[in-house]
Image (tube, rainbow, N blue to C red):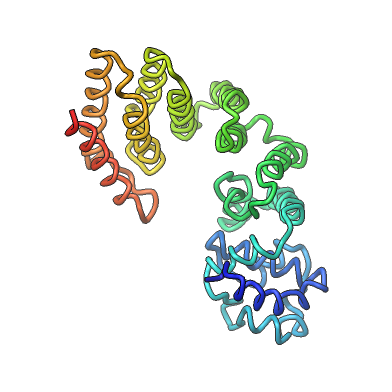
Length: 313
């Protein structure tokens, strides 16, 4: 609904008068950003994100256009929904504006992240590929993401030694099928883990498995296809059962549909055995970790997909 031309034109008429004031524009960006992070829209937190005090200015919050988009009460600012805030970010802010503001926030909250849970959450969100990718407009998205992660390690220079940073940067490249670059960044993350024994490699392992599956789908040689599949499977079978793992297990069906027929008889048996082993592992409720609200849904979907593969043989 928010992306319909009629609605976009209506919101544009409301929002453009506000955007003529740079401080108003920046504060609306902060409100929508915090709402997309599912963080409280407290004036104090908005002020910290923008590094100004405009949110306390009655001239701003009593503006008729502001009131059409938001409301104010004793708890802070209210917005219609996170979907609405996402629509504002994607449709009314240029990518360059968003990237520069996100970089400023990363710099600022890097210094604050030890002060409170909310500060730490904001810092984590602006580093996270899945979040930044979700809020950016589609136009020129890949180039803006690459620019963002390149600039991040300059603005927050300790990130160059952080495996999680290289994982996020690798995910950017993998999403756009730049496999060689993604693999280089994942290799860097794995190398850095060796000096960080406390770091959980699960997140990198699931993305490395994803990369192997993408490579399998791009191959025609049956032995290479199976080799990439089993490398990904071996990484996933060692991981705890959670959403990150389930999302990659769902790719077994893509490989089955596209490549199974080209495998040798013995490799077909090995493929089915891997699926059987994985379904038994996922059915182990005790090792199931609830990560998100759709965790059970993804788990059940994986079981259905693996059952489909096994039952077709």
